[in-house]
Image (cartoon, rainbow, N blue to C red; front, side, top):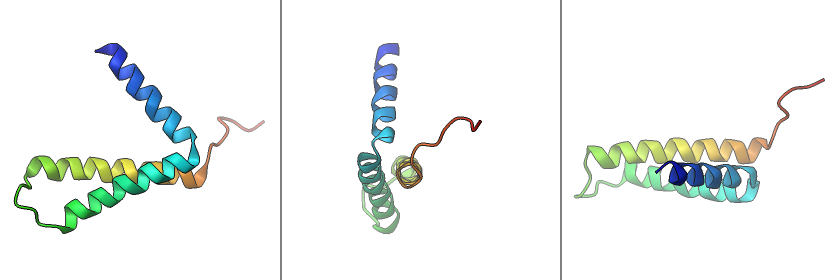
Length: 76
């Protein structure tokens, strides 16, 4: 279980460091969240509402990382 979490974390970090991939993944997550918020599907429940919020927040974070780029940890 621990190695799976490490692999997922590594994949997310590699995605965030690639600006084009981060923007594409962020836009798709945000678009899915907007679609879940707008469309009233018959299968929707509190679980899908929560997953939509998580997908929207992840998408917004990835878009901000893609637009802002990498910044140094400190400035000398």
